[in-house]
Image 1 (cartoon, rainbow, N blue to C red):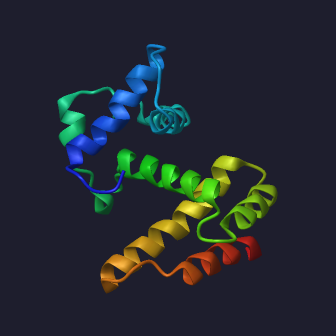
Image 2: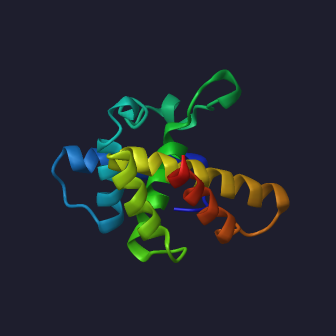
Length: 143
């Protein structure tokens, strides 16, 4: 799901959610997207398909969360867990889930570290530092 124009990437969420609600067959990625959308009822209006939602800018400095970015990070976490990439993330996630008692809370702990890792890599013009990412997750376990 990386790359491409913003609206077309957002349309992936809209289309998968529409198909899921209508009981239409879903490709594996669409199923994953629809599951993540289902877990976020607060974002259902954003995936309504309205053109204004697809074109909308979100301003974190004004306290706004970009629902598409947030859900994409959830998808990224699920893909990492499915492949245990970076190596060891599946075990760290399992331990976070046990400690926090909730999969969604564990997802958010991982998302916090993933977003920081991606932001740092972008700022440095480098690939994400997997060791630093895993260290961030280990720090969550010590909290």
